[in-house]
Image (cartoon, rainbow, N blue to C red; front, side):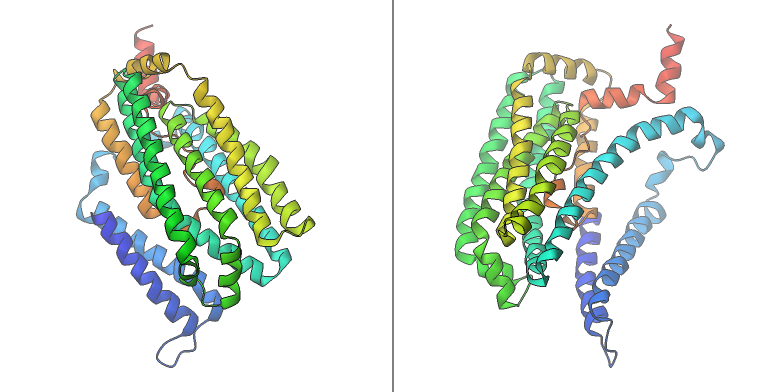
Length: 359
């Protein structure tokens, strides 16, 4: 609840900051366009201040886990553990942001109207993603839980249930988007040209969303199975071999305009989904459940599930959805599944020292 309050307060404050920094107040004329990013930076600092004040100053949550600065923090084996976790996660983030940035930069070649329309549709995509990311995250957590208990059938049942819910959300969104598309795009822009351009591309936009929803669920499934490496592989192949090249060829070379960008994104998401479908079909669920159950015996599954849920909630609250690209939604960072937990725990210096005592 405190995190929710801080995020909601910061969101409202960001609206005020944007109004003041862009258009000014009390006789001040404002900064114009540059005021928008400055407003975002200012509200982000306020959010950080609120989180630090609550977690460190008021509650002191850090005391249980952090004993202060010591030279032990930078020992070689501790740094190696940190880099082993940080480098793959950072590489995934670079892939996500770099591909989206390169593809987004291509829209600038087609003029301000195309660039603005693409930005508006990305904004709506981020909001729509919020409608389904919770179900995908819940599917991942519950699948991890049942796999940790050795129940492959229950894990598959959760996957089917998650798929049904996601498809149900897709149908609901279809009935909302088509009749109210101009009203929705009008939230981001009051320019009739921009709104009309976005409305004309609504068909391919909705298809992209439907394909992306399936991919989100499959990504969550592979994370639950501790196979996030396949997510990274699919992300790299689809982003750099499909999404980025087609983001130039379709809208610019073939002159498909705004539709071309979203067709490229749709094909990229489709390739990701196909790779992940192949991965799911290769899974021996009984073996996966047994491995997860063996891994879960080294820890408290209930505690790990709560930690994973809190981690997902905090990430969703701290990182604005609008700052995430369509290519990077439901990222490549693996969840705290039983198998992943065991691998990470075995990499810690304490675990290595304990293991050496039994040799």
